Image (cartoon, rainbow, N blue to C red; front, side, top):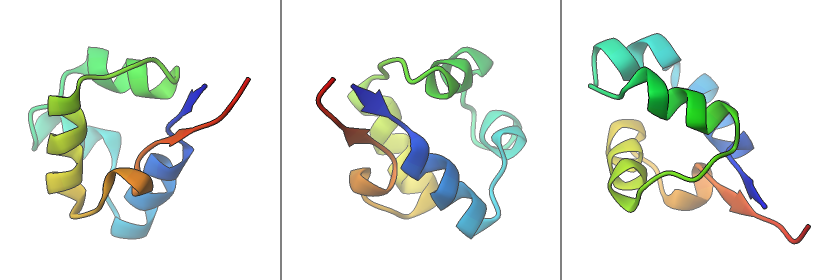
Length: 66
């Protein structure tokens, strides 16, 4: 199971909102919705999130067994 719980904490720690991701960094609202619903995203999106947040993938996503 994919969880983006680390993403929300990383964003909070860095003072970045979903508004910032959409309107200042070019993420689509659809992508944000997928993140909120723990749906899969592309590696390009993960790479872009890492660049914007200046972090590693471990600070964005975790994988757990069902």
